Length: 338
Image (cartoon, rainbow, N blue to C red; front, top):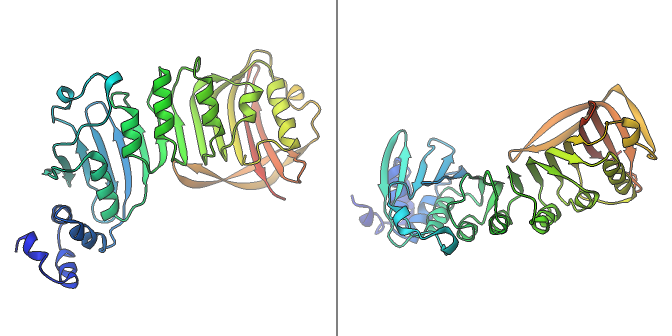
């Protein structure tokens, strides 16, 4: 029986028939019409979506249930001939087809009128997903504005290796606007302070900076994410962090739940200077506190032994976990209620 003849049957009968389909058949059937898409959706398939944007393709990897298909767009489609220079790009071209790989077998799916966004929304729909779990942008080949339109529901966004121009950062900022978590590998800070500050002020669940960056007190006071990690932070003096802690005690950064610095100092690191003028309590190592932390979109639990407690004006506590050497330190600050 052809797929088109199936659509003449009642929905209840169609569901029974397509329930026995292999995934490729389900995908082909879902592309026939909106009704067919909704019938496949009614099978309650569920999956997680991971997107990899590479130089020569955009790959949508789907993980869940019996199947883990991978969709590839633009690879071997002569896209480089169709796309104009990057500074003049307006939109991503319409894919000629989608390559879908299931169990090491690759087939082509066609839907001539589908733009890339139509493909992405269609796949999210039939797998009953509202968002893409993770998006990895490893190239700056594609126009950021186009990407922002296509991938407008992303939980975790990992930016490209380098953001060299103000235009790059503007585009990155727009693509990540709906994300809960962003990871920024590397960007040139000079000339993009305003965009950097806007990123700090967004209410992400977690933002992580993997590149070396020099931080000021103003930078720290702008942080509005629940969790922030700086893997290579540098400060002119410990006074910057000292003043930040004092501001937090007085009520700054109200959304802060955790912040971690792997940092370098121009001067010798001294614990007394970091905590100067702060009322604190050294906690014995036999006290254990359990915290949760967002890692790749999932909550991970860990135990903090001992540390240094400080108290906020509203009664909220934070435990500092500090490991220092001569000119560097790993400093974690974890907020909790008594």
